[in-house]
Length: 131
Image (cartoon, rainbow, N blue to C red; front, side, top):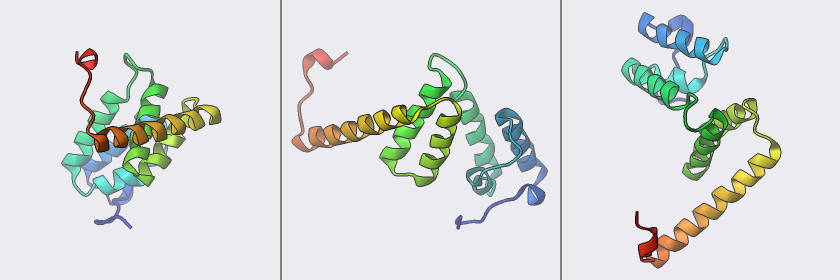
């Protein structure tokens, strides 16, 4: 259960409904997920977070699937179950294959292992890596 509960569309203020409408329009969907419903308890945070995600996750120098894969990798590393589920579903909708998912998880696991080893051994950074 969300700490402050979820704000359903029918119970939302006009300000929250406007963000919900933009989410549904942008994502071409007819529902609002629980992440947004929870954030709606603070309309300013809801609007700011939606505007930032809409801008950052839009096509750019990185294609949208790559952005979803990166988001998924960070979510796995941060152990956010909700974000893992959400961004796995989104990556699949954008074309992620099962093989890509398996390979991504291998890279995430390896990166986390070597990051922890490097941190634990307190390895000095090579001059050649400093840019």
